[in-house]
Image 1 (cartoon, helix red, strand yellow):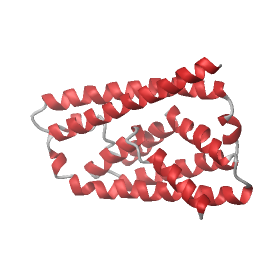
Image 2 (cartoon, helix red, strand yellow; image 1 turned 135 degrees about the vertical axis):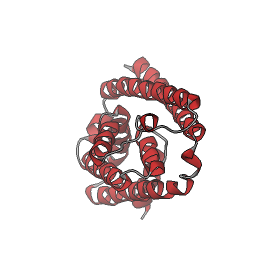
Image 3 (tube, one colour; image 1 turned 90 degrees about the vertical axis):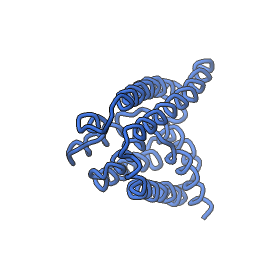
Length: 213
């Protein structure tokens, strides 16, 4: 039970953060566009990559500062790009008097295929996803024996299920509020600020890692 809670608490600390993937899930939920497909893709990615980290090479990668540094640099660039995109979108929305289809569709997938593609891209092309899974989760799980790793993994995945379905269907309560372009602009600004905060934290860790190399 303690190992399950350890996995769940680590999952909460890593998943319950408004990152690029979660921001996209929130947008799709508020727009009520293909949210079930988006949630399923997020869960499959978590199950496969986290499973590979817990039962595979995560522990080995977590011991290599060079791997962490390279992933971190890529992640920093990804976060900066996403922050800039969010702020630009907020500026565009603030200039709009109402939500136009062309504005809305820039950050919202209007078709199922596009929703799945964007979810895969924001998950698997985000280096921070691999930092969380291989470096942090892999490092923690490396100290567990084979039987405990399975319980630890269930704790992680349990949090993913609760979080994605909670955000995906719970956010609809606020959908009426987000009929205004100013509300969407506020969400984009908030997302951009979170990305900048993550950049600062990641940059600090990268600097420390560089000094140790």
